[in-house]
Amino acid sequence: MLKTLIKLRILEMFSGLRTKKGRSLGVAGMIILFFFAGLSFLFLFGTMAFALILGLGATDYKWLFFGIMAILSFMLSFIGTVFMTKQQMFEAKDNHALLSMPIKPRDILISRVLSIGIMDYALCLLIAFPFGVIYAIFGRFTIAGALFYILGVLLIPLIALAFSIFLGWLIAALSNKFKYKNFVSLVFSTIFLGIYFYFCFSWQDRIEDLINHGEEVAQVLSKYLTPVYHFGNAAANGSLLSFIIFALICIVPFVIALVIVAKNFVKIITTERGAAKIEYKGGEMKSSSAFSALSSMELKRFTSSSMYMLNAGIGLLFVLFLSIFALVKKGELLAVLNEIGPFADYIVPVMIAALLYLSSFTIISSATISLDGKTLWIPKTLPIEEDKVLFAKAFPHIAISLPVMIVSSLILEFLFSASFISRIMLVLIPAVVTVFNALLGVIINLNVPKFNWINEAQAVKQGMAPFLAMILSAVPAVLFTLLAVLFGVTGIISMDVYLIIYLLIAVLGTYLQYRWLSRKGALKFRRLQNN
Image (cartoon, rainbow, N blue to C red; front, side, top):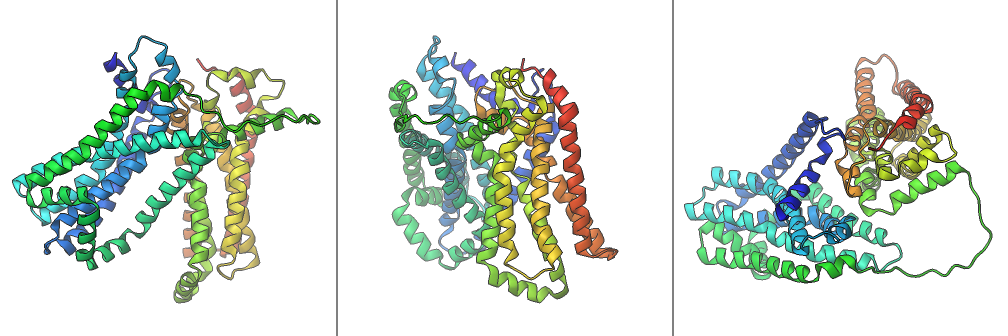
């Protein structure tokens, strides 16, 4: 039974590559996406490793090179799986169904831990591989050091998994004690992601500081982060004693976490932790239209799931980060604009392009049909036109994204001087493209829905529709950039005229999608089946 459970978990991880008929769909596209994403990470961490080896390779602190690698691997593995651990181990919707079967709870737990462990090892390898290659070329391993490095890389995910299990359990317990438990999960997720992205954007400065203060950093790490020192010492100097100490530090907490959770697994996943009770005080009943009710339901589904909000709405965080960062760094940006001179006329198109590219990561509407799952019959049997059902599914994307885009555009307005038309276009173009992407997500999901999901994370993260939506939502940004470069280079028309033309193109595209959903889309939804 354990082998069967493990097989099912692995199939779930790759279930987004298949349609309901089992045929491979878009496998090449997914492979290409993962390939380029992997290359990006390998390049990022490879450049970090190269900078470190140049600064530390000729010093007595070569172990610090491996120590930094261990810290980065732990952070990426931990941040990448802590909320996955929370959802798959403690909040999975099939926990109760599996417990009702003749399956040992231990087997359920092990299968979930192994599936999470696979992700931990994949994330760890993204850092360990480039660091190992760089050191092999420029630092040169000893035989013992290379062996301890490889074995140590196999141990790092264990300590990350131990922390993920503990914190995932803690977040699940804490969030369930609050009325707005999903908000608590979202706050934790945003904090962790903020720390991660801050490091990614500022890593070069951090590496320079580390190299310039290598001795002080080495002393602090060796004193307060003993595992980091022992891993580095084992890999750099081939110390057997350091490797044994590091191995124990990784294995013991993992075993303890596993034993504690195994003994309390059934109690953990079956305990219902109620939120604060609300006393009903009565009052006048408020009625609303069927469209308003459906729109509110879709909006509530989005805001009631921290996983849904974080994965489908992360583009909004990027947009806000851009506008706030630009406002904080206003002085530096103005200094740059003063230097580029005549190119300052193109600052508005650059800002619009940035907003469009970042907003393409917002794919809220791309899973709204898939999330109906086995309850698809409910909106199909309601006394409301099919086109209104589809527009209601685009509502949360528009209602949440549009205010963020408008506010971010208005913030950017304070950064520079521009013509009146450019300022208007800076607000209108991102707003119209936001509606365009909302309707596009529904259209894509209507054509490639995913109903055979076990938990909502599969529909949101592993469905083909969200993947296609993220790719195709970037088309307006790419088109905007190409046309801006074309007209900017040729000088056929001014940028103000171009911005007006593009706005008309975006409005036309949005209207055509609206017409398609109103007619062919409504007919397609009427015939849609979830079996």
